[in-house]
Length: 162
Image (cartoon, rainbow, N blue to C red):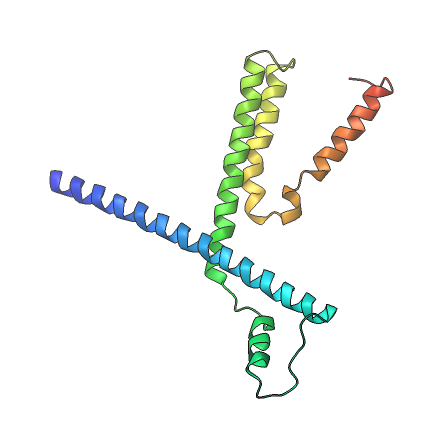
């Protein structure tokens, strides 16, 4: 039994190591993709502005360099899927953090509201994690919240209900 326990611990360590390697490779791949896109944009802007002259002779090696730089990038579905998973998990942890902070503030008396309302808000925040994997990228932008907060501030300045 002890031998199995040791083997299990060893396997768990190896899995953690491989998961760390996978995450590092995906992050590195994402950085490389961003660099390629930046270079493509730089070259296209240079050509459009006339700073980079496109060779006109088919045998000019510079033409092949520009062709490669401007050609569409190969897709990286495994990297994209992995990075989506990482983003979703990070966002979930962010929601847990927000719920924890909000409830801690309520417990400490910084939020003057009923226990039911505090619990409802915390549950709503925690339940939002169920929808994160399929949410659009724009759903993670804070502009909607900022707009609503501005509207509330305006109502309060005009003497609206609190």
